[in-house]
Length: 136
Image (cartoon, helix red, strand yellow):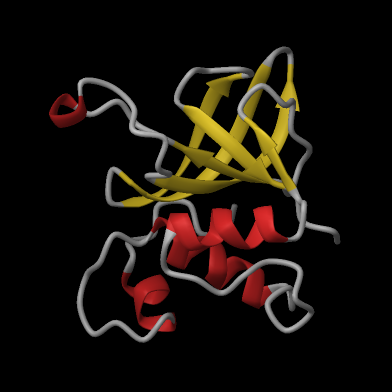
């Protein structure tokens, strides 16, 4: 939460990029590294949503979008896109679940309006693709 409002420079630089990239996964990886979770193999170090999803699936730590998450779970989204007339079943965005209360998921997400943002989603919202469930 201390990162809310920050731009992406710190996070894409952490991943080795010299200029701006889509950085939501970079942010999640940076946060995980700050907590020691990269070295502990709890959360993957990745700059891509698809590779993060694959990492959790390979470890049987994946739940679909109907799951009610826990704080610390990694939330993945599949946005509607005009070019595909809807969703394409490929993850487009990722964030961190802060808490779940009253049927809503509160998240911290990098690259949300090009900054770190707090967001709120209804449990079961159709663009929530699924969740990585780290074993902390």
